[in-house]
Length: 306
Ligand SMILES: NC(=O)c1ccc[n+]([C@@H]2O[C@H](COP(=O)([O-])OP(=O)(O)OC[C@H]3O[C@@H](n4cnc5c(N)ncnc54)[C@H](O)[C@@H]3O)[C@@H](O)[C@H]2O)c1
Image (tube, rainbow, N blue to C red):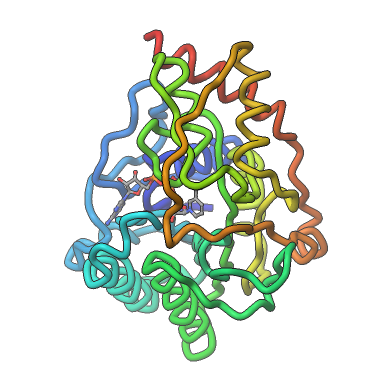
């Protein structure tokens, strides 16, 4: 199978590339960024470009059987500053992609939505896929709109769309400034001797998923004819305060966070119900939080020392 991974030079995308290669797929990556030299693969066809580049879509899709769409130009914390750019940078290019896929061949698409923002402030926890989307940030609103267009494309034109709604993904290769990545930011800061900050009193609850577990379900979704929306999380919540306690044990020293005012777009508690993805794919995360933190800390320490 020839797969196009859009955003394959990013944190999550690079792990999905690794997994697809390990499973014997031929991989093309579309990304404006260059692959990090430490993780670039000679057998991957890295194409530098933007999804917005409509004229090049036939070239990007040539010879491709399936697409994984991981590109995003926004993050939850900054998306409300310019929702119009969120729409023009993410929603419209995806609609152009769907039109080009209709014309040039591939009928399978795996899309990364957002389990952390699409439900807004959930009425229940763990939150199932049947919960009404009621996002409170533009990033989540645009992800919801993208999901709807995928479902429309499936209904009208036979696209096979598998939508994954990940929780908070963490692990090696996550950048220090990744605003979606509190674990990456904390570990890099601690490794560099910088302070860590907590927005609010640390009671916010999140669901953390190790990136290789996510790459596994992404690959399974790609290989499957199953369509629809699937949460992809650990199914377990932890407060930021308790996470810091776990991080303290991982790094083997005291951690003294600086507490800042809470942010309006932060949902107080999100834990994903993963029974649907488990029943459909037999998938369940294999890496627990302590093991995942240790693996991430090991990578961060080497990376920051280099
Ligand atoms: N990291 C998380 O915890 C998390 C959680 C839920 C959903 N997601 C979603 O997963 C996807 C990947 O997230 P990530 O954390 O790896 O982000 P990332 O920023 O590390 O990677 C995104 C990649 O997309 C590329 N990209 C951006 N705009 C592009 C464009 N127009 N055309 C082609 N490539 C483009 C970037 O250069 C980058 O390499 C995103 O869609 C994000 O919304 C991430």
